Length: 455
Image (cartoon, rainbow, N blue to C red):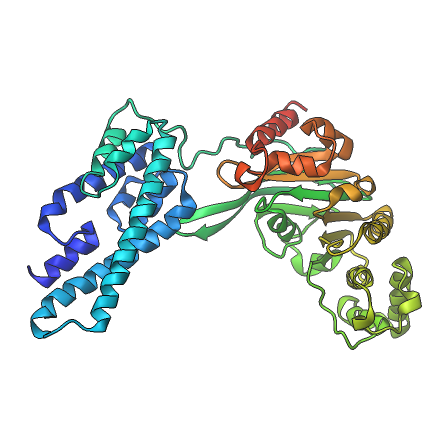
C-alpha cells in the first residue's frame, strides 16, 4: 500500500488497513452522537486524540482522558513509524536491537490504551446507568463502535448529566449584606476565574459574592482544590478574575497600582535573609513598602510600633536564623503590617506551630482586626483558634470540579447550617468521597444559594 495512504489511515482512523475503515467510521459516528447528547460539539469526534479526551469527559473521567489522549497521540506516532519501517524493510537484512525495543514499546502502548479504553467505557456505562455486561462489547476497537452507536442513536439511552451542566447558577444571586457596593469593608463579586486547560475552558471559581465589614476576622475553609488560593489571589489582585473587588469604596482592579499597597498578603514561604537582624529586616521592608517621602525617623517609629504589636522588641537585634518558627511567622506578618493595610490575608500562618504558639499568633491577628481592619486567614487547624473569628467562608468543589461558595456567615451560623460542631467536620462534609469526605458539596452549595435568595 502507498505509504501516504497508510499514514493517512493511521492518523484519521488509527488503522493500518482499509479493512478496518468501516468500523472506525462507525466509531466516529457513534462518538459524535454521544458528544451531542453530552453537550459537547459533535465535530470533536473527527479530531484524533481530542476525540478520546472528550469521550472521557462524557464518561466523567476527565483525568483519565488527558492520559488517554496523549497515549492515542503516541500510538499514532508509533504506528506511523511502523508504516515507515514496513516500507524500508526490504532494505534491511536483519532486525536491529532498536527494532525489538520499538516492538516492546508499541505493545506496552497498546496495553495502556486498552486499559484506559476500558476505564472510559466503564465510566460511560455508569453515566448511562447501564449493566456492566456492556463492557463485553468494549474490549476491541473493531466492535466497540456498537455500544457507542446504540447509546448515541437510541432515545432510550440518555446520560444522567451533561458535561457542561452547571447544577447551580448563582450569577443573579444578590450579595450577602447590602445589595450594592460598600464604602467601608470588602465587597467581593467574582463571576468566574477560568484558565484554558487541555482543549477547553476550565473554571476554577464561579459565582462567589460576599460583603465583609471592617473589623472582621474571617476564616477561609475548603478542601484541597476547592479554590482557596485562587480566591485570595483574585481578591488581592495578584491573579485577576472576571470580578469586581471593592475595598473601602475603591475598585481593586481598576486602580491596582495604588490599591495593592492597601493589601497585606503573607504567603506560606518566608522571604527573609537569615543573616539580617529582626530590626534590619523590618527597616529594609519599610524602605520598600512605605512612601518615599516618609522620613527615616518616621520609618523607624513604624518599625518599632509593629515590633511592639507582635512582641519582637526584645529580640530586635537577633539574627533571623536564630529565631523560632513562631517568631519567624510573626516577623513575616510584621513586614506586611508596616504599610498599615486595610485588608490582611494570611495563608496558613500557623503552619508548624504548636497549639499554644498558634493561639498567641491568632490573638495578635485579632488585635489587627480590632483596629478597624479585615483579616482573612487560611488554616488547616481551624478548631484550635476558631473563637478568634467573626465569620467563615466555605468553598467547595461542585460536581464539575469548580470552586463555589458553600457558605458565608458567622461561626455559629455555620455550625447550624452544616449541622456540624467543628470546622474540620464542615470541611469533611463538602470534600469529595475519594478525598475522605462526605461528598455533599453540591447539596450545601444549592442549600446556601436558596438561603441567600430567600433572604
